[in-house]
Length: 376
Image (cartoon, rainbow, N blue to C red; front, side):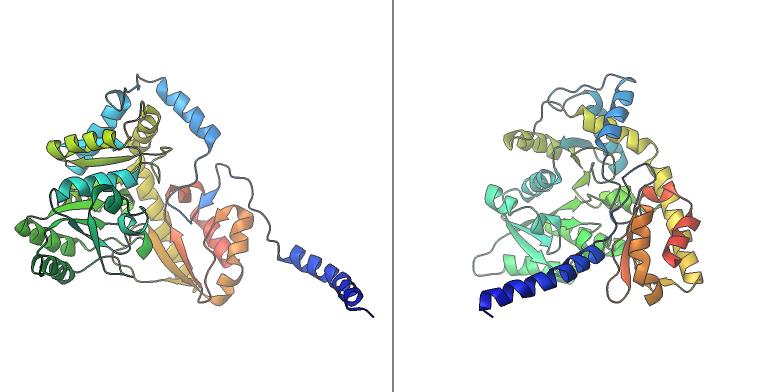
């Protein structure tokens, strides 16, 4: 038999096996997204365009939300509300968190060229070196693989800059909390206070990337944490229903500079009232929904532990992300059980560990239903 004939006949013989294997390997699809869909793998459910448009149409009937180049209307109300919530004099809407972080560290650094950041932060890992390229700042990253640096690490970085052969000044320290790349870990409050006291003594200003700050457990002192920092950024679209956007809060002088830089970087949108209207409405009952979601999560974790099905990994500074170690029999089929029921869950790893992201979609079903899905 010729080589080509042999290969052709072999492939034909093998083809049904391949097709069968592909058919068998194809997982069942998730049911269509609806009001009962639950997302244990994110900060919220992805936005539904039709529902969002209907909600926006409903909300705009209640007032005059229109802003003009981000001034007045619902945008002004949103800025005032966040300024009060974060305990700051003023607040500015910005189209993206990337711009909010960049503008903040540029203002705070002043004439200095060095900014200390976490290695695992959004500012360092996800912003395409924007602050380096567009503002000439040198980001000094600390604590790779960990949520944040210790005070001693920060002191060492400052000392290295100030006492090298060509002395340089660290103008700002930017810290992200919660830290997405560290399973949503919040920086320890006592460590933050120590870092803030040291920075003040050195004349170094502080920025908080608090994109997910409101996802800290109920009772967390948001305003107290914000008080340690000169500027604070919070995201509007991750869990506050806006299609995009961010707010940056700080002193009147700093936020005036932020508005000027926003315009220079092309971020002064003609209107952002849709973001503001949706966010303001989400804030009205956010605390209640947030508390209910955490209470449901606590009940779920307790029930799974009582059943001997799972254990929570210790996480004293966790925000809304919990690592759950499932017993082998539970882990084996839980992803597909959840999929068929319309619940998104991160597939457990080889050791049975999955992450459960606490958000208000947990409130869409009774806890007992989740327990049954886990147990099978």
